[in-house]
Figure 1: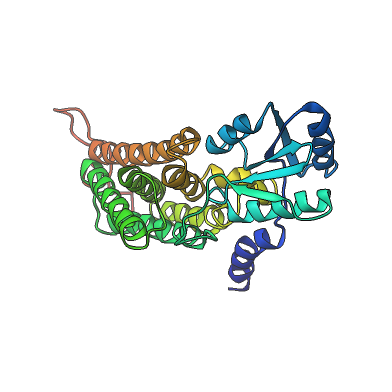
Figure 2: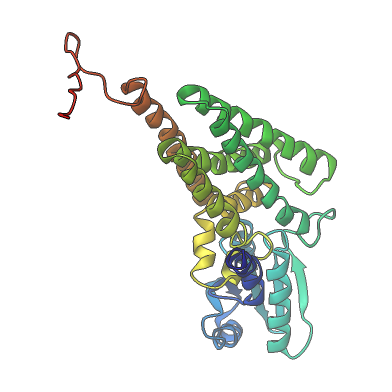
Length: 319
């Protein structure tokens, strides 16, 4: 129990204690004469920012809306102006305001290009929704395993349960709470695919190697996937390499996909969509393969002999 407590505390508390920018993509726009000093000021914090240069403010705004950068500093003769996207990460928006103000020697004009919804200005509701989606997927995988569903029946049950879970998420978060403001069907699809990826990651290994696989898939999702999802901050604020690792697991990919669908008209959805599809596809394939292997065996799991062949009879050992 002490080992379990220590491991759980490390997974959930350590990322928050080590939050800091690590190659955080930001833009610097404006005439070279005034933009270059601003870019050098950001680059002095070695390893903190990935500074990308754009010609003007319009190009920087487009990069923010496409989720290529988290924010932009527009250099003007009258001083810098900061563009943020609190919908991408309220924590990053606050961090950029502090960093740019420190470099400018005081507060700077700030424009929120893609603001977070008024119902969830700090992004807490969206971050809190990742764990329930993961738990819904784990419960689905456990029920499919415990009920003994196999093959096509198991796969259909996983997909149907995930679709219902996605629809329920959209009803609560979009229609009731108003914290998701994009396409209803896009949000429902992103949430449903997240649930399916988690459920398949649990049910697939369970079908192949038994309940040990179920425990391993569930632990991977809860102890690694959720705390390192970056949903409450951003993957670039987590310790390396766990920020990148979280994006390759269903909770992190699901959080990014839901955010893109809810606030950015689906921009930058390709990567998370691919990750979730791979987890769901591999898990469902494992369920179907395990059913075929079981069907190829006899009642006791042994492989049947060809027709007309008698099994060898056991001979009694000499006294």
